[in-house]
Length: 477
Image (cartoon, rainbow, N blue to C red; front, side, top):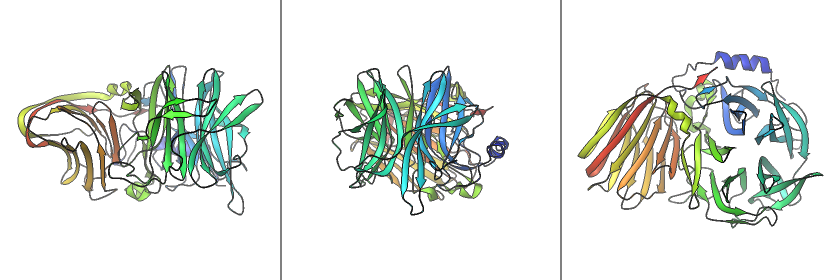
């Protein structure tokens, strides 16, 4: 095991704020050094949102999996992140893997996967509780020491939920035949009992399911999970790995999940391993802006850091579909603004702020295609909606650095096309049709320029209206 000196690492983090790299973002959670990935342990307690996330403080590769910790009361001002948990013993010597958080007896507790390999590289995955004390997780008891029969040691990422007065956790797993699934455990007077495999319509759907979570929207359940190994199709499954959900009704007794089709929760290039808070029925989701096995798409490696977390999003379920919108608290980032108002024109363009939010409606008129062009001194990202085909396309092949490629997905718009576009230094989040679809991705322009946004149609557009705000920065105290 590596030597993790919490005091030295925390001091180095403090000195890294404010960020110095021009590519660091203003309103996305990041670290001044190291590699971050899955958000973990999201917990609400006594007016404070507690956020943990995977972090390698010793480099920009997927090793040395630790947990970092920050907290906020308003999603604007955060505590300076610190090292909360790192490998310490035989159980988690090869990584403190992902897990969940919960409020219990007035404390923030976590449940995570311990990863350990023997001299023959045989993995053992155990599930362990911990308790947050003064910014550090005290490791408590192991409640599941290994994987059940019929499943491999790819067995991780527990998520606790409550249903009918009982406590359960769902876990990502791989069957012995190397297909993915989710398992259910129930808390009993004798400890945590393995109930079995959640029965879905997806029997052969990738080789592993990671990062499951069970959210409840009134009488409906939605299970978020990340299947690995799906074959790409024209309008879906276009990333290396997927993050999505099925919605319907789960019976913990029979293990039956009666559900609709699997839907991706974000259609961008960089989004994975999401997790959600639940506070009084309000679901707030944070995802990892990154993608496993795609590290080279992120060129900031030379600056000693990689990846971000998404902005917090509020989730609602309508007719079996999850809608996403930026958490309402983020409106407090808004500063100056200007109005956008153009009519009977094929296009309009304007310069954005260094960090911006654009909230705009477009009435098609004669136009059948609408293109949003982000122009960074000649480097461009094209976001095009084809009304005839009902297809949204995001193309970043005209960027010189970082990840490239095209993403296509189905989207319905009739008379109006609605979007909210958040443009940070390198992180972009696009919300479409009142949050029916979302796309998160990075751009890495060679020049440190403020982008232009051009809105154009293939014919005369009836009306373009909305506002563009300058956004402030997250504060760290």
